[in-house]
Each structure stands twice: as C-alpha cells, then as structure tokens.
Image (cartoon, rainbow, N blue to C red; front, side, top):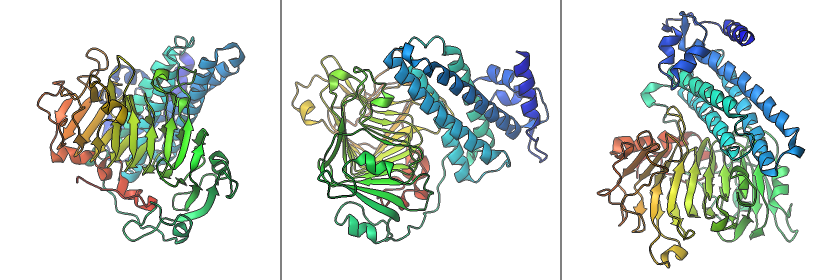
Length: 534
C-alpha cells in the first residue's frame, strides 16, 4: 500500500498546478461530481489548491499506468495459453487487443491535455469520444471473460479499472467539455478536394458528388476473383493499404467486383482512411459463419471488423450465415472512429450489427436480424435505413436494439432517424405470434432514440422490453419523436422513468450534426446526409 501512495503523490507533483483564475477544489469537492465519490477521494492526493484540470490530468495519467499494468497481466495469462481452454484464450486475446487500444487512447489524451486547460470544442469532443470508448473497451473485455475460469481472478482489476476510467471521464467532462453544447457541437462544413479519377474507376455506382465536390482518393485497387484485377481476395487488398494515412491525404479505395467472397476481413487500427466499394447490395457479398456456439467470442465472431479511423464502405452485402440456433453471430463490427456505411446490407440473426464504439454513420442501409440485432456503445446515427426483423427461434422475441452505455458521462447512444421498420419475408409469412420491440436496456445507461421513422404493425404496443426485472429502467434513456405508421403510437408504451416522448429541441441533440459532429467529417466521404431534423 505504501509504494502506491508514494507513486500517487510523486505523479501528482509532476503535473503543474494551474496559475490562472480557475477555481480550486479539495478532493471532496471535486469528487462529488463523479459517479464514484468515495473511490475518487481515495485516489486523488489531498491538495486543496488544485483545479479540475490538475485532478483530471492526474486521474488520466493514473489511468494510463493502470491500463499498462492490466495489459501486462493479460499478457501473462496468454503466456499460459497452452494450459487454458480455447474459449478463454480467445477472450484474453480480445482483451489484449482492446486494452492495447485503451493505452493508445489515453496516451493521445495525455498529449492533448497536458499542456493546456482549454481545448477547442472539436478537440474536446474528440477526447470525450476516446475516454468514452475506453470504458466500452474495458466492458467488452469483461463481458468476454464472464463465463471463463479467470472471471473471479480478474474481478478486482476490472472493478477498480472501471471506477478509475469513470472518474477520469467525469473530471475531463467537468473541466474541458463545453457545457453550453453538452458535449455536442456544430462545425463548419469542410471543403472536398476534387479528384475525377474516382468516377472513371467506379463509374455509375453510388459514389457520388456531395454539394458539387468530389472525394479525394490517393490510390485505387481492384479485387476480382477471376484474377483480372490487382488482387483476388479483399484481405490481400487491405493488407496492401498504406499505414497511418493522415486525414485529408486521400482514401485508399478498394473496388470489389461482384461475387461471393468467403473471407473474414479486419481493417486494423493502422489502416486508416480505407474505402471499400462494391457493385451493389446482393452483388458484392462478403460472408462468414462464426458464432458464440462454435467457440468464438461475440467480439470476434464478426465477418467484417473495422478499427481503422475514417473507414468507408459502400454498395456491399456483409453476412453472417451461422443462423438463429448459433445465437450471437456478428456480420459487421465497427470500432472505427468516423466510420461510414452507405448503401450496404448487413444480414444475420442475433447481434447482426455491432456498433461497438466511437463515432459512426449509416445511410441507406438494410439491417436484418432477430435478437438485439443492432447493439454496442458507439455514438451512431442510422439515417434512411431499412430495419428488417426476421423470424427468431421458437420462444424468442425480437429486440431491434440493445444499446450498451455504462456511464452517464459517455457521449454514446443509438439514434435512428427516418428509417423504416418492416418485417423480413420469413417473419411476415409466419403465424404472427412473434413479438418485436424497439429495444431493451443492455447496460445501465442505455440510450436509444427513434425519430421521424416508419414503424409497421409488427412493433408491440409497449414499444420496449426490460432486460431483466427492473434493471436500468430508471437510468436508461429511451425516446421517440414524431414517428409514423401503425406501430408508432405511444399511447400504450412502457411507463418507465427512462422512457420519453420528446420535442424537437431534445430530438435535435441526436441529429447527425449534433450527436456525431457529422458536418466536420461526412462531406469528405461523398456520402449524402441530412444534418438536422427532416
């Protein structure tokens, strides 16, 4: 205990205290603004002349040290993987990957805040997003280890890590985030650099001009299974992409000719600003069949997984064909910041679309599934999409969303705007006894909003369904705004404290401009979008 106390004090001393007129606080005063006041008070040094910025820097530095220690612990277990069940090894490998991302995110945040107590709103939004994702990554790691033999051994590190990350997020939000926007800001529209070559390469397909500008592309490669292109496999084309492309440097465009590609695709964190363009839904098809029943984690069951920032996909079908009986089986998982999906189809049953973390946008997409088929903890807007609940296994019900927000200070949630919810053919032709709900609260602060969307008669009049007992019914945020169709009536909706019928002012917080700051990054993708309410 003593060495940790010495480390804590010495680390605090290397962080300069503010000399401005910023108010100072005692640990007791500042910790009351966090979700874990007692833990926070035990963490922060007793310095009554420190500002929220000093405490925030200290907590985030401490978070990085804790993350690195936790990563070493995971690495140690993986050295013993020959003695562990395969399911445990796969869960540990997920943790190794996710905690590694957390180390990157915290290092990025420290570089940004160590030298300043003021941030432009856009940069504060970026850091708020990273700190929110750190909690999501930690939770995903914990969830994956739930049924393994290491669950009890790692309980305390997980619990303490979650509290530390939560305190860091709260202090950052209290100090650096602009309260007037509550973490969401409008930004000026970026200009799009013109590059005519993209139209010559992908002529006639939905890679279109937006506002008169074109998409900037640095290189175009073609994938053809008959050998007539640069590559015969999508994975090989991805591997050839340059590393760590800067924003504005132009997309590495992979044009995938029509065909069925039985591949598992991973867009790694160093493959940034990659664009994959197919020949259209049901023409360019990427398919796999991994599932939890067959020994994969939910996280690594994805047919297509993307982490690299700025990813764009267009005109594709991505499938997981494991089937309803195999339970969790992901088609697409995105943990890529500023990722965009346009005119794509995602097909599966349980857990089809995993909007895992960071900021995402889906436009004119089709999503098929049964249980929790849009889930995760990104800040995500789905706009003009078609949601198709399918026929689940006997005894199951359909829940369209299962949003995974675990902390009140995370800037995450699922916004579904101007979408259409109708039964997939197998459900439409069934006996009609399957119940379909808009969503259920997977985690304590689950947040989902449906606005200006069409809901067919398959939606149960209650609208929403509980996860287990009264879990999260008080703390979740579920809202509806000006929806239409026979399933849209709110007259018989649930009466939970967390359910709301909202007005235009509240709904505006969940638009593309406000919720994912889309005006700053979507124009460069060439994907059409509506910035505000319809």
